[in-house]
Every structure is written in structure tokens, then in C-alpha cells.
Length: 392
Image 1: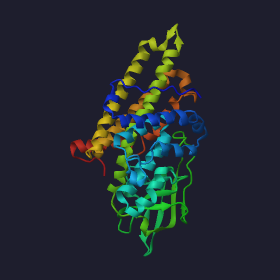
Image 2: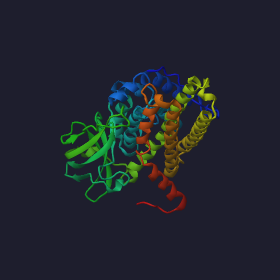
Image 3: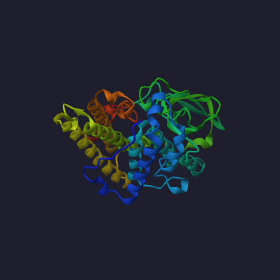
Image 4: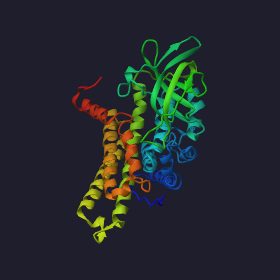
């Protein structure tokens, strides 16, 4: 494994727009990634295994529920801090960032926003510390971009609910202690339920043979007549808007996280171009490589400004779902394009595990699809600006 010499690009002096707390939070996450992720991640990706020993470190840098109030175990940080933490973690690996995103935005957030006080006190502190890990069950084998068609259902049995169905492509599922599961009641209304590992009929088979997010654990959630206590219902909000509110938070984190992956690819390509000698000079001295590098940096800078402004809007409670969709779509596509260009700068070396680029590229093929596909986010923006929805 090559030493992690990463230096973050900041061509427009964006650091000047950050508070001292923002920079302290970011730098702590950056140093943790250099120390605890970079030396091991290629090996775990090659083995298609999630490094569970990093969970405590993620908790230590505030990656689990950073914007959750300290009274519930969170760090009580703002949305820009959350974004910066996701940026630094994804600079290390998208799969590791997925673990943190799910825990924060898809497990802790719905318990905090839609749960009752007993649920908050019971689960949030343990989730913040990493003592408990969670997952989010929305996507199903037959329902991805149209979650309203979900087939997972629960019935009121008097003293408990009876849950049946299945969820697919669930990050953290193989080791999660709890799952936030979205299911329809008898009249077809969508509700969230907290399902705990060990409940009879609840299983989480792992998904294998992935070419992407190989250092992240992915699985299914199977519910076969699972008895869920009534106190595990998230009562604060129901309907499709409830899980979509969680996805807004996750998509916001992805908009920042993808910048980290792009930064790492750019930094790797820049270093290599300065060192690689062809025709008697570094390839960085050639026009074509300078074009690639200049365009990479331009796109990263644009994405940084987009994410920062979105973070300001989030802090003010003004960020719309469509604005979040625009940032997620743009920044992930930007990162994937940069990964592909950076791979070309490295030539054949770019496909090896000696460098991070090919791993980032494969990971980003998942990131551009999950939490809303590239095309769906385009249509969300289209509906917002025209007033006409092109899908149901």
C-alpha cells in the first residue's frame, strides 16, 4: 500500500468560508482516514469484506449522527460539519461512507425526527457510540425507484404487529442490530417500524459477488411473520414522505461525500503525472494531461461551492428536496467522470490496487444509482422547474 500523501484541493479558498469548528471537524476526520482507512481499505476491498474494527473510530470522529443533539449522544454539529465528515470518509472509501450515512441519516434521523422520546433515549445514544448499528429497509426486489409500490406489509394483531415481506440492496444489513423498515398497514399507508435482530422470522442474508462497494456489507431483509412490538412503531410521521425525508438527509451527505472521492482521484492523478516520465519529461508537462487535470479541478471546485451553499440552506431549514437532488446528481456524476479521467492519466497502473482510482470508480457506479438514480434525480429537478411530474 502506497503512503497516503493526500492534499485536498482548494482552488477558490473555500476554507475561508468555513468556521474554525468546521475545519477542526474536517481535519480530525481526514487524519483518521489517513491513519485507519487508507492502510487497510484496498485489502478489504479485494477480499470483499467490511472492516468492522473501524466502527469505534467512526463514532469517535462524530460520523454517527453528527447533527443529532448531544442530549441523545450525537455531536450537535451543523449540516456543513456533517457534509465535511462525509467528504473525508468517502475520500477513503464510498463503502465506509455508506455505513456512516445509513447510520446517521437513515437510522438515527428517523428515530430522532419521527420517533417518541422513549425510542430516542433507548436507541440514539447506542447508535451514536456504535454500540448498536442499524440499516434502512425501503428498496424491494420489485420496487426501487417506485417505493410507493412496496409489497412489505404489517397487520395489527392486537398486542403486536405481524410483519411480512422482503427488502433488497440494504447497506449494513448483514451485521445491523436494528432495521428501520418501511411497510404498509392494512389500508396501504406506509409506516416505519424498528425491527431488532433476534426477532423470530427476521433474517439478513448477505449479498455476494459485487464489483462495487466491496468493502461495504450489503444484504437482504427477510420478514417471515415477524412479531414487532407496538412500541416499535415510528408514530411521528407516516406516508411516503417519511422515508423520503430520510433520503433527503442521506442524499445531502452523498453530495458532499462524492467530492471526497473526486478529490482523491484528482490528487492521485496529479502526483502520478508529475512523477511519470515519458519522452524525456513528466507527463504533467504535456497539454493533454494538463487539460485533464485542469478540468478535474474545475469540476471539483464547482461541486464544492454547490455543496457549501446547499449546506448553508440546510442549516437555515430552506433546502428543498429538488435542490438536494440536483447536488447529489451533479456531484456523483462529476466524481465518476473524474475517476475515469484519472484512471487514464495513470494508464495501466490505474487498474491496480496500488492506487485508489479503480476502487473509487467501481464504488461510484453504485453511488450514482442508490438513494435515487441519476435519471430519477434529473426528473425530480425537471418536475420542480416545470411543474409537471414525468413519473408517479
